[in-house]
Image 1 (tube, rainbow, N blue to C red):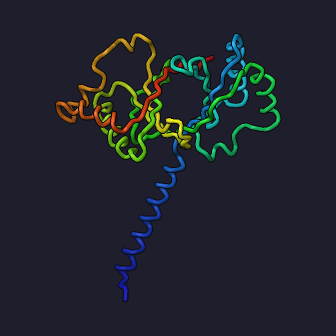
Image 2 (image 1 turned 90 degrees about the horizontal axis):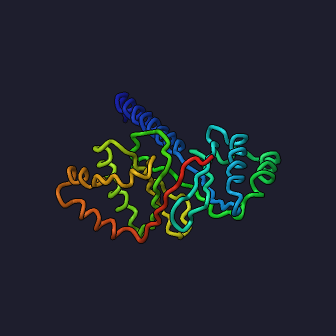
Image 3 (image 1 turned 120 degrees about the vertical axis):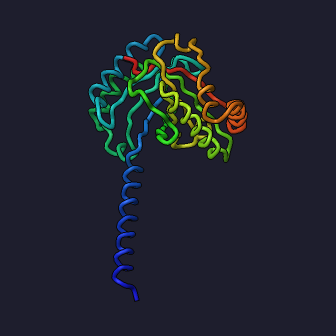
Length: 247
């Protein structure tokens, strides 16, 4: 027969389990995700396209979970494409996104006439555990690596990036952001790593990157081992530079 003390202990444990379960659920529903849509403007209509998108965003996607912006891809095979970005949001937020006749008609009449074609639509979830953000200011440009991971090696990627995060944390002067593609399309875009910069000259400022700090934490020669593992877990990388917040 259970004593009062045993019953009380059981009740307290159940209360704690319910509390932690609630916290876990709250955090799970509080993630940050971006919806991105690739759009190619008609040749010679790029300025009109940007103006139309800016107007549409100001009218229907000005703030909150459905705030939208426009980036321009500057390098790589998709250079010249624009990327319309909404968020940060969650999938739940998509159920009450701006829509309806007025919204759709505004896009059709102002934006669509300047569009040559639409490309991929993707949903990228911010990986807070693998990212380090020391500066919340929006940079002028971002270098983005879209990475094709070898099948079954995501756990190794997480371990690798955890060490990279710690090096950035120790260095404490720049951001590194990791995103996970929520829908695997088999196109080599499993995860993305993002770094920001404000001037092209920063790409000439070679201070050895994160290598020195990484080896201060993990020991001399550890960077070479890390690069060997990186080669083992990645199939290919699509590197691009985006101009942020085009207006």
